[in-house]
Length: 319
Image (cartoon, rainbow, N blue to C red; front, side, top):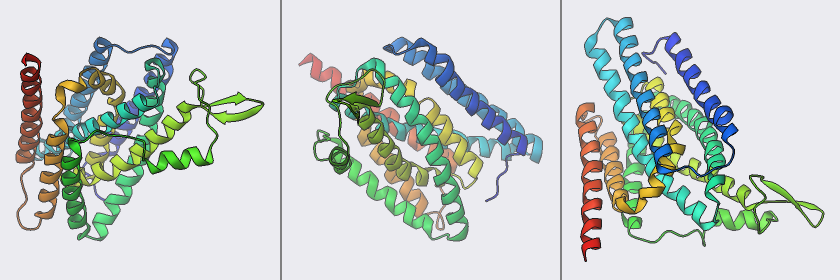
């Protein structure tokens, strides 16, 4: 797997990720369990987005410095931006599932922050492994591109049909298995994953939530990793765009949880994005859709979906 990024930029990226996780786990942990309001979530979301754009600017400069080509720098930074936007968009569907899990288990809002923080660590580790494996497979077997593309198209169609249905965890096989093999308390014990009842150590509902969040990370990584490989084969761009999208996941969750009802059509837009990306991947040897066109299509679909959501919501309110 070849990458255009110099070694020092890899080191800078790792340092940024470690510093970000330190802030999340150490600095913010001192705040203790507390409710995160819309203003705080919005501020942190803007911080993570700004950090991602600053990194992309540094990436642009590094590529130009190492290759001497402004055109190459523009192309690679555009690939990062497109990949970041796609991964950020697909994370929205991830967030809606988190919201469903938290609602189903009635997780107190001031405990949700810790669950999301642990989920972010798991997602980073998991996606790093899957990106390295996926990159190696694509380098060895070109035909896997068509497999990835077909998978994304099928996933998009499935997401479209499921978008209008009421989600439920009642028939979730993973949840049924966990309940069968693990004794679980009916009550929360602060932010603990284990508690003592009748002299024996058993899991708390928060542990069940962590397990389901981890499962969600696995499922959505399977969807999102092929999507970014449709934009670029550079492992550095694939990894960094994924990780920067994930780093802001916790703040974006609390922001979207407050306004989820206003964007009720968003899953339809995400479904169309997946079908488009899958089609782009399947056509790669016939016609390579420019990255700028891909970026415009993704932005256009998501913008249109959000505008239609707000418009239909306002019309329903007037009735």
